Picture (cartoon, rainbow, N blue to C red):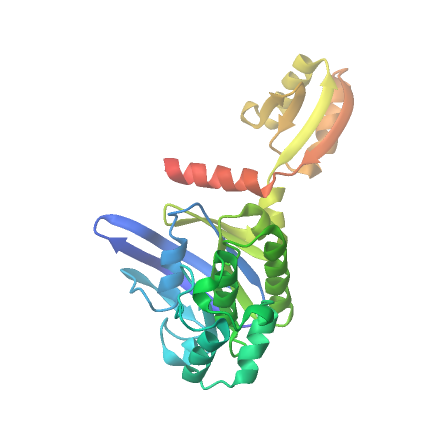
Length: 300
């Protein structure tokens, strides 16, 4: 790994007595798609606005591309779409991008490249007010792509897109990372995050509940054992791993242990004259992980 793209330490934003973001510690590495996952109102957008320098934190610190949030030298290397796009309704999509390009001292070649990336070239001459929600979202992503930024911060970029458009957007985001750009993707869509993100930060009630790869989050599951007689199997398993790690689901044992402990458990079951019919590791879905983490967060 090279130098971090984004680092926050104790990042906090309070509105009165309410903490919208509470002591956030996260790290984003170069060239990765970082999924910022959480329910609506969890603090995702507030965090992104702080990273862009649009909101001043109440406490804590952050660095973005080696600079404080909002510093011009860093902002020039960031493309963002936060809380939906906003454009001049009476201008065309192309004309709106040209306005932004002039501010960034970019030429029309950059505008056409961005339109092509989001598959909007054919409708670029239409006025923005005639665009559907999905087309407006595409134009917002195109604006973020102007100038080939080092870091893209995208807040719900597939909002309003049909299934085909969502698939195209996922492919685009993945290709950007493959080309060396870093993407922070805020989303509440579990399938979207699972398909394209290298690492995930799960936020709930303003607090980071977990930060890891999708596979590592899902792997924290357990072992399923089908054995007979079940009551004897429960007794043996309880003696091996402890009662707090043993439960029964659909006539099978569910054990919260690592897969490497399976041989010792099977030996104990066989020694106790318990017939073992099946043993397999059960991965949790990202949905299971998400609801477990956010439910724990809501009750803490």
